[in-house]
Image (cartoon, rainbow, N blue to C red; front, side, top):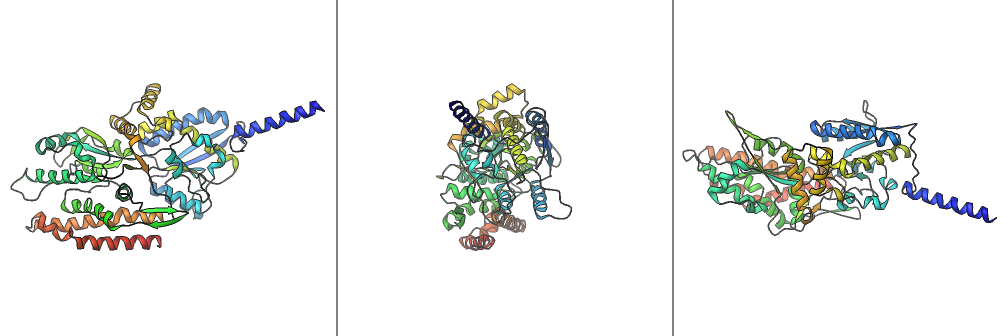
Length: 484
């Protein structure tokens, strides 16, 4: 009798231990003799795709072989192409491919797919102590389900940095007394941009008002979301699943006067697809963009009839004077399609492996993306991985990652929570003011060509009445988009 009780006790303990080891009560359903095949859709191209494919191959040859998982990655082209392919699959569009097991997704798109009931609950496959190893805000961003469970697995993140054409900056700084310290605030950038316009205008005294733009920025939506956050306002505030739009006039006026006004006056500019393109053509000296854009910062300026090599400076992105030190948190994560336990479990196993410090940093060294584990976000760990794996890292990418790692403790990463029509609302932030600035700048240039001074030509566009008109239109567009 005692022997039977003892055996039963050991069986219970073994069963309990098995539950603990497999995580959240999910027993390992994998069988190396009967491997499961996973498809991954992503938007990586060029060197990023090469780096991702190399890691997939390494996984398949090691952990994947041991556990019975085989992964195949497919680039869908751009982020927009990927989102279209996912929507076509979910909607059952004729000719659409079947839903992949895993796909890259930004929070707004993932939210749409989650609302359709098509995403796996990743919390079912991850212990709390595993989640605690990841940067807290990255995990929080992925909790888009109504019950707060995880739907987006953080795989690679980015923030914004400022990059400067050092070669052309130095003579300007020496002549005018402007310093890099001045560029730490957005107001300082505007003041420097005005001085640069006036300085370059003075190079050709026989040609009036031909000054050049100093600065531009990618992702104007980030300027709104993070700029307002720095000023103490959450523009898209979500509580209990309900959206509150916060559009106070005073703070939005500050954003308007530090983006629209210098754009209209020609102190800022936006010409090519990305601001790094504008640095390459010599139309800008500096820009704010994603850390992943560092690899695209040009090595030379290419003019119509000549070119010359340039060096670079990497800085943290400027913030509003007196503002809180918020920084953009961006970058797609990976989501897992709802299917069966075996495929979902295998997908999470791959994602856990991909985000291990060494593997994630190896990808980041090529892509400029930040790793997602807490332990991986340090220059020391970056140097260790480079040395251990013998990696060749572009200096611009290395400097970019190092700067962010160095400043990370003083930055507060932020991204707004997902909500219905969030993608459409973000487009209002991206284009409403920026498009008007480009259009009005064209009118100012036409007036200058007709003989007016910059001050007179821009005067009608920078009045309080002009702001009020834009503000009303902007708020109307946002409210109509989100139905509030």
